[in-house]
Image (tube, rainbow, N blue to C red):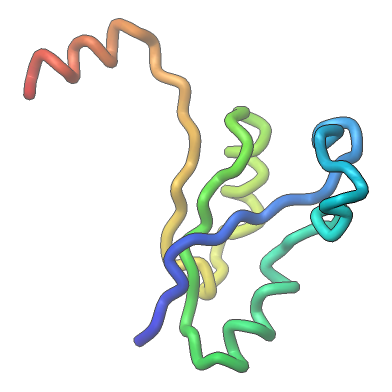
Length: 94
């Protein structure tokens, strides 16, 4: 079984991605699972791991919703903001 280990998904929003200029205009597109699935199939890849690109709660919720029940996404790396007290507590247990 072959799994693609690193994939970002997003809906292009010009305001949120204002740093994307004409030199890299190919990035001014949506990159969704529906775009990737034909590529995975043609290369015999069974699935992928989705890595969250933007560090926001809205992005975390969106990614969890769009991949819910999808068999092409075998894992997710998402952003979660932890209070400093939880981080220092975790360090003290190491």
